[in-house]
Length: 79
Image (cartoon, rainbow, N blue to C red; front, side, top):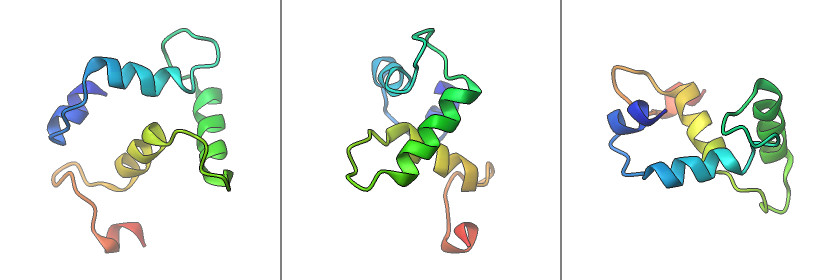
């Protein structure tokens, strides 16, 4: 993930990335399992109060839509 963030021009520190993972790492193994990922995605999409931390969710959405050759999203990409 760190290499991808560098390509995107992000200035996130390792601690910030570890914090994003920690917020959804239920078994505290410093990795997001498939189950934890699905839970994170569901919790963030159905949270009406916006109380969930969404940094990892927003990064995930960006990476789902972006094209690696551009590392940016256009309106057409999200349609």
